[in-house]
Image (cartoon, rainbow, N blue to C red; front, side, top):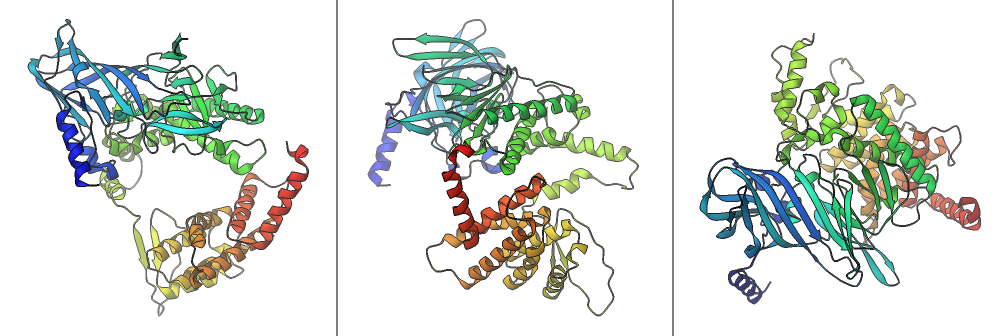
Length: 599
């Protein structure tokens, strides 16, 4: 960037009295704990309720990169102060429109808007603001994000050479502040009224159902008002504006499609929702906290969904109209995971971003007893979790004296990698072998011992090593290879036995290794000897697996076998197996020649 450009930017910032915009010096590592702590707000002001109104220019012929916003926040000031701090990022706030209205009607205007640190806007007032309830009013302009977090503007598809756009929020950590000024911390819960103005060809979605729609026929715009939310954190709020249509008629579970979607998929998705919902009702003895759940089918170029309460985004790649076992597993995994978070992952939320793992922990592992102990829509800390576990351990008849769970887990949660157990064998004395042990640690051996393990795996008695240990050996060997603690030829020896392995558990770490490594085979220069040796062994192992389980699906095969076969054939073709490629071309030709059979 030239000196002249930098000077002009500084001049504009100094000369403009109307708008203030926050920029971020931690942009590259903004979710690091150090940066997050810098953005923490001082105590003394609590958000109670947000009224948010956004205006989106969604016309196909308008290349808008901005949206308009008005936000009125009901707050409670706990003690006298002359300043108010809240989060705001990449929002151009109209300073002349900012005002604070006391509960008796008195209006205060800030004498200064200042970002003392990135993300944190501080409003300074001449008068001391007394404790009580106030309404803080903003008008501003925000910027759409093209990727990552915030309010995303994403290309959908072209129709008649015109691009269709979709607009989706991805808030997650510290991103709600890019759409509206707020107290953007997970422990600070409030209620929300959301309104979105958009072109009438589009539909607007949010956490709650639509309460009212007001049409402006002259501008071809519609203002969608949504019902008031329950208490929730800012990062759980969701907003989407997309050109879609309803493709099912369930009263609670709504599926929205951008184009024709096979009805058997819609039926299957609805049935999976009901199955998971019934399971959660029986498991928790509760019903979902919100009156609806929208699933919106979106293109694969939408970033990974950071779950919004009441609204989920499902990617096109999960759609199938066949009995595809891989996609079935992926789809049910998505539905079960996301609905668990919808059901009670938001009931007990973390107090800070570093504790976000706690929500998933509650959603996946805690039983109704734990949920009954916390306040609805309250906050929990990791200490609450460890204290509860310590109480259960202390009351259990287990021989652990003076065992502090918090101290032990603090070490595990704050180190970057798993612990490593180094095994050095004394070959001159006899040994006792303890088998079928696994845990959250890695085991490294001396070279001679690795070779003896490889010989055992390569024998006809390799199944005497438990499948969990076989999987761990492969996973650990690859890890130590990458970390340069293991020679490449030993890794090849350890994995060479896979040509006769038919257990999916043992193959799973190898499938992951293949997904990590395949891009190296696409490099433009010649293939090094090391990669050539690896490719040869990979193809030999995959061919052995497919020979053992068969190339074609059989009605007697279970889902895991079909999944393993499909994955093995995919990687065999990816790594350049000629027979696999010929079979794929043949099957594609058959399909093209018999389209009616497959449609």
